[in-house]
Image (tube, rainbow, N blue to C red):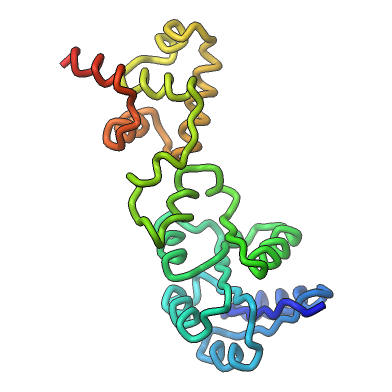
Length: 229
């Protein structure tokens, strides 16, 4: 079986040599490392990698520009970025540049290898903290869409979650929502938690504002709100 050819671009020598040795222990992977100081593209010509593993925080070069150059020179090569905790804006920029996957540097060895293998097969892989949220849909469609407004429909809300969104938009407290929907307060809190996770938001205030500006409030609740004004 043909091996997955992997080029590792990492300017920390200890990490670079450690990951290179670890990858070459795998029966289905052939790895070659580069420092990121200008030797990466020469080694890419030599190895013709299926996957490039790139440190997001290269000290010697702009990692985003490296991605753009790799995709320009080697369009068939998939790129995976490694970082501790990539911020949302960085993830979007790197996806637009052509990155196919992300690996957190505290990932397990199994996760690390699984990501490489999936990306080599053509899959897209996001870091676990960013999956199952609106943000994952934004990233998935970043190249084609680029706007949140066209992605709202991609996030599936249950009927009960939509009811909770409507009542939060109307300014109801958890206690009032529980009474109106005839459910327990802890159930309301659970719904709010799941909604915030799906939308990658942090507070009820953010949720209320987001619901109004992105048209997530139902027509009935909008009429109730308009009548109060």
